[in-house]
Image 1: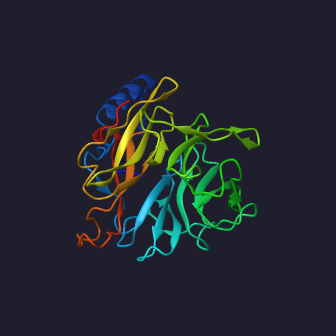
Image 2: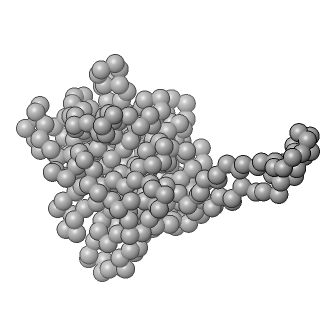
Image 3: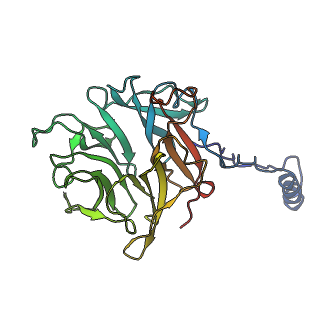
Length: 312
């Protein structure tokens, strides 16, 4: 999942026909001479995520990591962006596996996967038909993990869904769920919580003085901060952070230059340990720079949250 490697436990054994005391002394000396393998430092600059596996010449965006770090799900589009599919890759001893279409995706336009903090549910946005609506638009769906894998897609239904666009779900460990919607004619972020088998009525969220034009808001697992996207004049879209402030949220602060660029930077994600930020950028990456009139494909990057300028 990251550049870090997990240290294997050290095992020190005393051998030979020695007294228990001498064996203990020798074992302590032997262990003192061993050191755990150093962990690779967290990236301090935006680093392409798994080039050739996750990041390719096709458009990739919006990633989520399972709590145990063994699976990643992300969006991949066809070159003309007519097809939108959720891909999955699994961690193996040899590295990340070749991505394959997630078992619940592939037939419709599916984007924005998000695995709940407990790992039991995966939310995503899809334009698949809904029994309760004649309008064909992106809405919130989810699958639940079973002993046999992910179950069949479930329409989140009202009040999370409406006849308007609803996308980019994220959720904290306390159960607060955020998503973006145009249900009142303006793109806003809404918050809701599940109450038994039902969801609470979504409430518009303001980040400081900003209530409209916010999108791609991902809440951290702890609920301490939100990384979100705002359009910036002459810069397309940039990433911002808003910290929990009492019952509300602070005025958004832009992430540092280098994370934000003159290209579109969006679709943030936070690892379960709250150490890494993932985001999509259309800056030159796998594919070299193109004419300004041609939209770049976009790749997924990772960087330390601290290095990105997230501090709450």
